Image 1 (cartoon, rainbow, N blue to C red):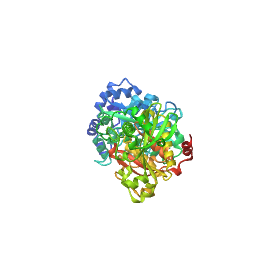
Image 2: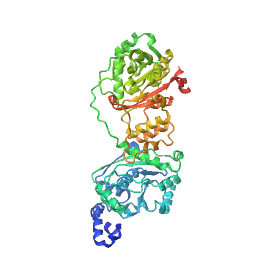
Image 3: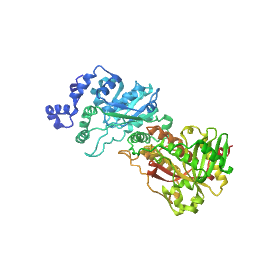
Image 4: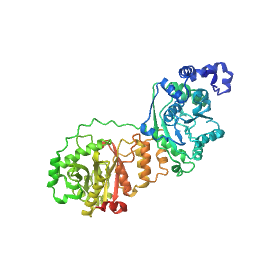
Length: 576
């Protein structure tokens, strides 16, 4: 195929028409058609997805996508993949390569101006005019798309209709607004929609030429494909939005929500990392016999619960030096595995010396399983004042909070050791132990403390969780008496300013939040288990603080009213 003769070069002005002989060679050089011709000569015997793979191989482009995310691509039936458009030709090639591995019959919607460059892909394309009255002249193409979907052929769509570009010489490249006709297509199709994010960025000359005339930007697209040689392209795949889930959106809300999801996928990938110092080895494990002997020497009333081989104790630090040493080791071991921890050989601080320690012991295995640190508020206020609360190291606790503090048990440093985390019983038994302690100390009504969101979560996921809590379970009155020492601030990426607010649409339960966060995070992690647990127990939150001393985790100040627990929780805790 001769690209020079088949490609219709745009002539943006009448002046260029008069300068035809000069303009054509310059425009061909701008598009780098000669170099592109050499590439096409190397792959001229290929077609379809084989052609895509051959082009990517010739350009030495590495495509990276998580296998777990690739499994989100529906294997049967129609769907529409909606993606950002940072680079141009490369975006389509990469996503055809990725999605085509699962669904080789996939069709991509493409700009008909590029048809001469894509003849080997004609069986995988639907050509449209994205600049023609915002798709309104593409009614036949839209009908064609619907026919494909009705025949269970999936589609790849770039709703922006144009590649991301700068609108000022030194601004940041951003996509145009997503075309509302794409939303009308999705509403009419009633098929799953797969959010997709692809990495990429074009050269300054691409945007600068576009400032002269948009057609020059289009002309530059072949060159922008060639200058990506030797690069790595990352692809993120979200969770498909099912037709039943789409029904919760108003007609004009669906596309902004999908765009926010795509941006959030990219924000999670682009999240800055925090360098943590090399953590020293943990202290040695405490001898099991020393722990068993220490428990045997405790007064009987320190054992607050027995359930088969499981025993729950509450004791003072001076009564359990060996147990406390092992608790400190297990805390650090458990927290490090989720991107938290003090990065010290053991997690032990001055608060441990005067707080109580509630812990679960597996008598059959002869080991500690999990623990909570418990601070009786009345005792702490009397002996140490407000500064005696661990929470005071994270938040400034004002005088107006004293009535609440005096009726509260502060809980913190909770963990279940890794090998027991897949069992629901350990956490339940720890909570039964807390309930037993409350029953023995009726002067306490509230459970307060920090609940952590690991720094392993991306900033956008943390922002979505914080925004959800502020909308659904935040106590403004109590928050007036609390001031975070290091406030959490979300700095969105360019074009991402409304992402967190948009993602809240229709998000009315912690289960829906958990599903969304799991879809956004590259690791697939959902909302932290303890945070989900507190929200389900009608907890209220009064502030958020970043803790540099604990691997930069985000701590939420939680207040749980023991008089306001769900009935199901009461029954569960009372059951023998």
